[in-house]
Image (cartoon, rainbow, N blue to C red):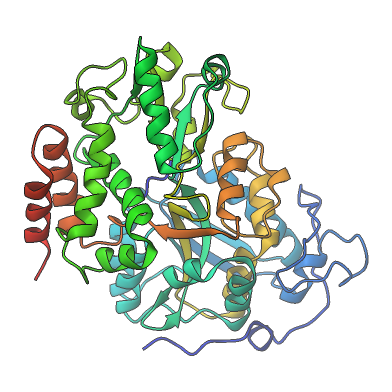
Length: 462
């Protein structure tokens, strides 16, 4: 589950669309003194030396032009987004009309089908992007945007912004899921080492259990109507690790049955931890207590010393109580959920994509800006409390304030990392946000693996 807290016009090369001029638009004072980094098609020398608007010279003078943007990112998370647009607005003269809506996923489709889409939408799932493209209203990404994505992201990310062989949407922000939370002080006191393989993770779990006094793992999957989604993340992580990315892709696309050997092995591997009475549910109760414990509360026993390990995404940093230090030498931190061996580095996560419904010059310019490392670093600087990351390789980790954000970015930027998007968010709603959640909940409360996966397979739309 991607939590945030899920005949096109021809491509237009940016230079042609803008009638490119190298004259700089007037720059306002503001707080946009961000020097461009290595990419994005802008040169620090364009417009002269230290000029803070040098990175925006290619966009020309856009005074009086407005770009409408529609997103699910609402207050208070919207402020860093809006602030990250200010340098573009100040240096080009354009105005970005920001609209956040909690019902975005529904409303953006309604607006596209009615012929009244925004200029740009921040799309949280590849599946939704595919639906939007099917309306015929999304325009192909400009050549400069495609070039930025080729430079700053891997092929896996570009693939999620591609529909039917045509590239439409550059990646934007991300979340990273392949993490295990722990207590650094406990690890130091007990002499525990960060595991580098799945076998080492099992050995660590066994050692914590044998040391007595606590269960090694704690978890919670309750989330209202979405109860069960954390197990889907667990299974996706194990599917990636045991079967590899190619088989994972086939499973997500239903090119192999949901109840075929690979998925069975993945869920059984999850069960070796979550349905193991010796391992769970530390500080919370028996195995079945996982179903009644909210996902927000699932990792809190680490602070109480009644649990040692909790698998949850980078966004879980926001769930620790006020005053908790999240750092390598703090109260809690996280390590990468390892692969089968040290050479492989599967990475599960989610993210957002920029889809455009118009190719006016100002829209193309803003679309280009959002695909650059310049924007990624501006966004990091505009997020002083942390909680935001991107897989953009031009993002300087020094601009991130949160240690967990820096850890997540270091993994996403690792050349060995093979990223895959949250599987349930790509599946049909009847499965990804219905039967998968429900059967995962039934599974943790006693239903066997075969029955659970058979029922999910039967629910897949024909």
